[in-house]
Length: 178
Image 1: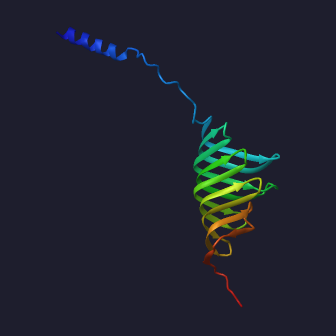
Image 2: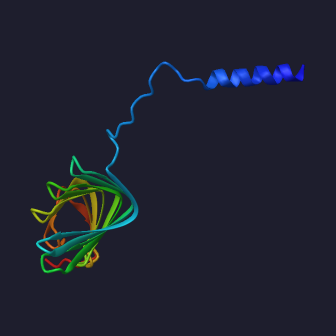
Image 3: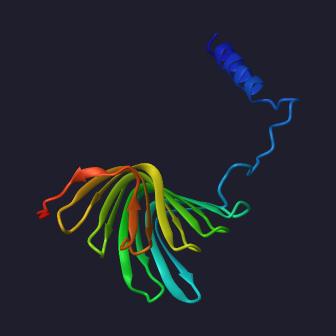
């Protein structure tokens, strides 16, 4: 009796493991990154000059689209054409369009500039060709003079020295004599 059950069990397993007449779907790379890395450091340069050093916990790169996605605690150190450090940016993630030399930092973006201007926003774009940083989102700008400004929309040079904020409101600790 025991042998009969063992035989039926083996027959059932063999039938379940037999090959199907339907072909398996072919593996495809469509939508998958060409490269994937963890704990990365990338140096962007222009004419042999260091322009940015980017660190992230995870990177996915898509060669055909010239697109890189960075996530998990993105930190970007920016440098001007004279190789002087201009600011450090922190964000949850960032996207890089390599063809346009354009980067967008996304979610919990904080910029600490060497010029004394600090910025917090949801997204911030950097156009390397124009040497311009900007956003259309809400911003909070704090200066080393003690000013705190809020607005919607921000544009600045890459050093965060010459900037404009749209629809500003805020406070200052400066004394006004008229």
